[in-house]
Image 1 (tube, rainbow, N blue to C red):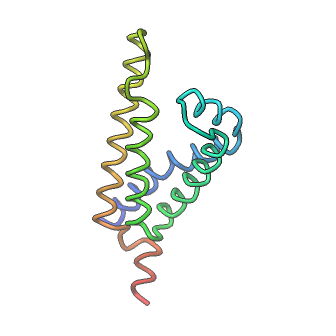
Image 2: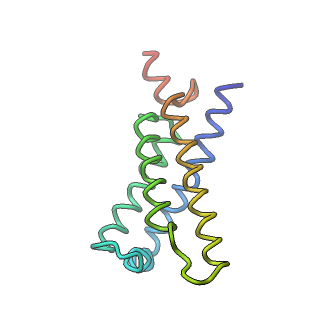
Length: 134
């Protein structure tokens, strides 16, 4: 049961990053414009790096390869995204501010899930487990 739960958790967490990475790659100009609106330097470069990172790390988590490292990186990424993209956003619009605060909390919760994976590992149904049994 634990291995099935770890696999399900990996798939559910990774789906967010896989879909985001594909979306970003499909619209680099839009992603760069969003990053530019946040005041990030070199927004086109940040868009490419972010999209590739989300895809690569998402795939690593799905297959369970180097899961502890990928999970730690994705936890850090999620915390950074929470504070760069959502903290203090919304201006004077209470609805928009509420939406950003919810997104901030979601990103923090996702980081918690990845921290748990960094400790627990990927479980028996993973490349990590297969490699360690050889």
